[in-house]
Image (tube, rainbow, N blue to C red; front, side, top):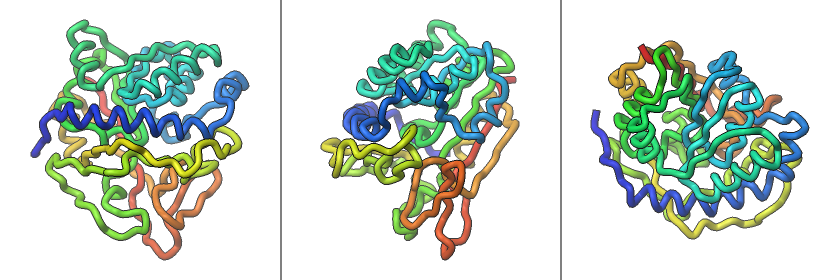
Amino acid sequence: MTNAPLRKELHEENRLSWNEATKAHNSHKGNQAKFFREGGNTLFPEEKELLGDIAGLSVVHLQCNAGQDTLSLAQLGAVMTGVDISDEAINFAQKLSEESGIPATFYRADIFDWLAETIKKKAQFNIVFSSYGAVCWISDINIWAKGIAAILKPSGRFVIVEFHPVAMIFDRDWSHKFPYFSNGKPLTWEDGISDYVAASSDGLSLSDYETGIENFCNPHRSHEFQWSIGQIVTALLQAGLALEVLQEYPYSNGCKLFERMHETPGRRWFPPEDVPNLPLMYGIVARKV
């Protein structure tokens, strides 16, 4: 497996890009504290099924963004910690936790720095959780996997629901534009992280979609890393985790990844009829042995 080195300068550009994008994303989601106070939950059936009963368990949500899923996990009884590189996202998450009355601890940090510090402190969790658009920001898949294994308690689980790397080889018009095997080479987007919440409308809003920020243009570029399913699974296995579940799904939850997708109940997006089905998401459960 060919790995990219840690590219901290690219991580920093991603932090700036996420700071701007997060403002746009949250502008469409209305009164989020009210949503949670009234019992709202952002989790999809797929992650709930893979996680199982998490009441009373310590869970860390890596790359937690603005904390909506983190607080949703807390509503299921978990003792939650969220970590994200974006200042804007973590500030929002902390405020949302306070205003909704749902407790969680949040840290603003580069995930690799946080993993290293947590390993040094010998802190461990029952579950490490990650989801939806997280792995593409990881510049070294082996260091990531080893860090996850190190912060899991014995018999603890890593659970992820993520967009499938096969889907990432297509442009928005379904043309095959990007490589599946990138050998750790970053893909740079000069226009940065988009307002994909606006593109998905009700699919990613917590209740009724609000117009919010219009015609968003990100002033900071971003850098993504493409890892194949084989590279991801192998990294987890080599880190000492035992694979229990590898599931693939022919739809994307919430996010309208491509043009002409059609939405079905449950906010699932499927390809248009003239596009043969393909895996758009995957789920993994891996246990520390």
